[in-house]
Image (cartoon, rainbow, N blue to C red; front, top):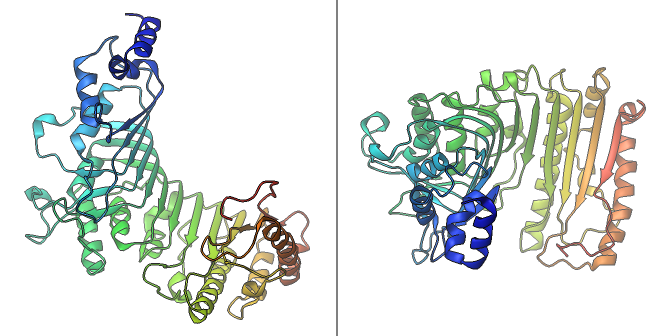
Length: 444
């Protein structure tokens, strides 16, 4: 049956559409909440109805689960690792895989394992949970009865090369105990991840990594990737300053091939832990090929009381000071582009308010001297994004735009005044803000 006939049939029959879709489209999104065509049904159709041979047209595949949380009444989308790769085996041309809202469990049936490992251009893991199963094999047993990251390890063992990997909001939970908390045992968590990484049997290689989440349970994945040498060829990375990941990541062989580093210095809204600049001492000396360093931070208020709000602002100033020091002073001499991005999410900042940037903790003089010594530096950029908090924001659209314009001018004047040696070098220093729009910003 030719493709035009398939297309006509799929328009007439929804049931036939499910069978024809892999042949007709380049991108597929399979929703596990579908009552008639969930992820397992999709795999059965691929195997049983090879109408026109292999589905070579499909390039991008998204497996969308029902989501998960600690509410026991929510039905989880539980998919084992072999099922995911069995679907990929039926889509030989697929180079991008995105997994969203799925609890990934380990498969214990060796008969269902794919015969060949898979290479991907893009692998995105969004809001996933990996099973901490007690049924790990002897090779992955850790300290007897302790749970281990067996499903994540099994997934890595089935991958060959991954050009771009994104990990966002990923958890570790037991499949029969959703609220397992690793935060109470951070040292054991990290040592377990390192142990498992050294037991890895595959040679997975990742070139570009994006990892954003501020929890210890998320860090175990990063530690496992590092200790397994999966990041040995890493070239670019975006990472949040979680637990020990920043300091431990930017040491040793991992940093040697890095050319681009984007570091997010984020507030700890969950645990209300004050930011300590001593924790932000980066060891960037190993990044001998680093060319671009970008550091993002946020200015905001999350406390309910005035006292808590003042603490948050003070905390914001400490984060900006750490960002400035890391970018200007700690960056290796190979860096030619430095970018500092500040997101202002205060509820109702006053026009011309640059008080956060004038905090005593911010050493502008040292930053200016450090930048002046960098003769190969080609660009120093400050970018300010204005996104007032949705909670108790007292500004309407016009007021918000006026505050943004006035504040941005004050920011330009302040930075140029505090970085005189840097600003005197032609075409080196730029200060930008997000472009203005006629329509009202969504956050307002």
